[in-house]
Length: 411
Image 1 (tube, rainbow, N blue to C red):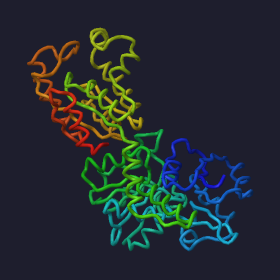
Image 2 (image 1 turned 60 degrees about the vertical axis):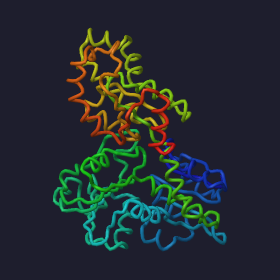
Image 3 (image 1 turned 135 degrees about the vertical axis):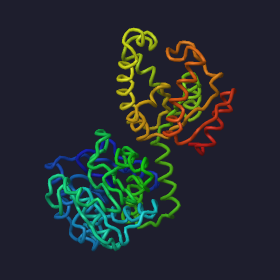
Image 4 (image 1 turned 90 degrees about the vertical axis):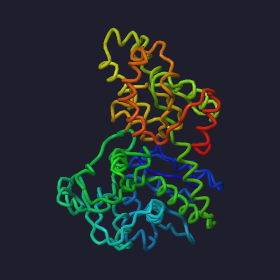
């Protein structure tokens, strides 16, 4: 192996995609347990490697020298040879600083609360000090290697910047969070080092409270950008870094279609999927496969409440997808947790169509214009609240598709 990433679990890493997009080398993902990690490091059969959880500190004894940044932080994520010596560096530091610039969040003269006390936390503490944070508080679930335990964060509700440096909320345990931002009324910036999903529960809450935030994707790409330069000695243009972030985000993101029953979500979803050459999924189709009958019949047999429970299960599952077009049932918007799940990796579009143009055949809750009006008065404010874009649906579906593509910037 010449170049690659080592760690314990790498099944959903984007590092291979990022490094190979630079066009200079193949990049391998190598999963190692504790024993095989030691064997791998002792063999030194590589040119340059990146290191991730849980080996960022364990890798230090295998280095011949550390850069000043890596030495100050006490963890490494990048290792390469220089004049025959194995150098340990920490490009996460560069990536984290880039992410702050990307998001417009400043730590200078701020009280910073850092969640987690592992290798990533050490890097964040170093950066916060260098960026002249006024006060830095480190909290962990156990209190070990930290200033305070997690429950004690309630004593620091005046924190202005909050940074999650733990894997809590990361795929596949989507939806988990260590704290509630509602307990921190002075918070003015939120950072989550997690990039899968793009919008964790922690960040979903920040978005709802209109607090500036960033996920870990800009940091991930920027640290890889810096590692590439250390590996090869080549200098990349900054626009390549920015283009890689945008390109990867577009590849990851789902397009989620919401709207009233009969507004054209399935029709437009299929056309959009064909146009973008990405998979299509309809949540109602998935539900029917699960219940083994048409939805109208299930409504008659089991009622709406049971249907909504199954719908929420499906929403949680498809919300973890990446790069799909997702058509949703008209009532999925009624449960805020459904929309959080669908927003994790999704751009949400509300397909707005006049009520008199909606198709009502085979739809158990859309039997008359009066019932549609009543439904619309409840649902349309919710569609608007949770949407990233509102799409006025044209009679010609191809006009609608062209408009959607224009809104999304070609995805």
